[in-house]
Image 1 (spheres, helix red, strand yellow):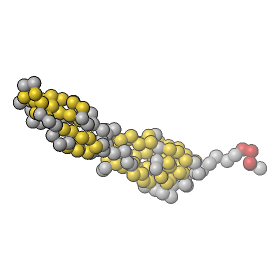
Image 2: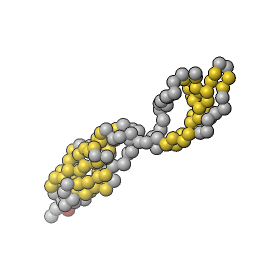
Image 3: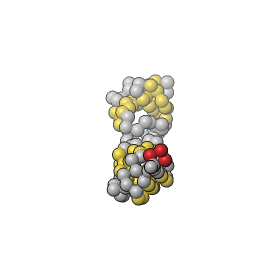
Image 4: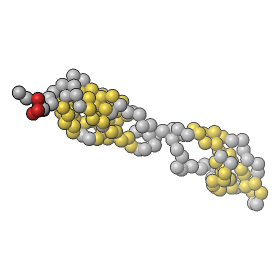
Length: 145
């Protein structure tokens, strides 16, 4: 016995199996599927639609760039995070291990005082880090007496 599989009322497959895997679906998206039975050259009415909402993929890795950042007190730098696979939720939690030296909010690092801080980006238990080295600003030669 054969089956026709419809996605949003469009025929996407004909199979002899009672199981079928649909590839290439977008995460966190709702889809509607129906099935019909094919006997010879006749097709039954479509089944009632089955609604499926896809999940996000599990986060496999997080990467932060740039890895090394040399900033003067008061300066800012935007760090980027890349989460793999691209079908995983792209939410990142940022943190600094030394907020007296550098703070971070949504990937933007602010240099607070001389020293070194490690900035961490975390997503679903996976993380990566970047180093921030903060120095005092160089004196402006025009302002020296």
